[in-house]
Image 1 (cartoon, helix red, strand yellow):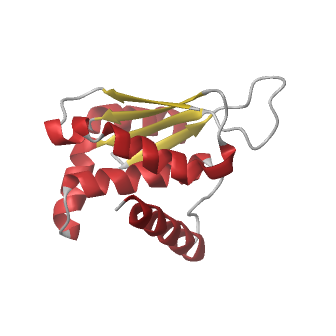
Image 2 (cartoon, rainbow, N blue to C red):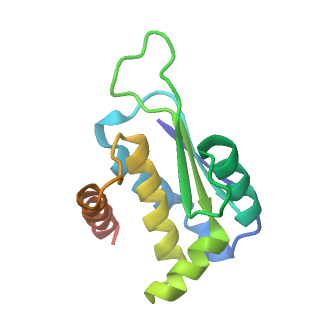
Length: 144
């Protein structure tokens, strides 16, 4: 599997240097769902993520992370994963400050969370959200 990382908005040098760490986090979250195709991790700004949120989810607001799962091409069987993960850099900065950790840590949390959505997890209920948060924490602990 290829994990490509793109920046639609300026990012701190430390974040850009952390590309290998982001790739490890996404790979770990996808587990055995790796395929021969690409998952893209795209860092964007408030405007970019708000447009996506409105267009595809009908929510006219900024959010921290959105994942788009694409159907597998003909001939591929589950559990192949193909998709994009959009992470809002400015929202991550605000959340990092509120949580008392670094922007890099918050971006890793959000990237992992988005990858878990691609892997089929969801957070529609408090119990499912807790499960996702525990899985995210376990993955980040592995990376440390």
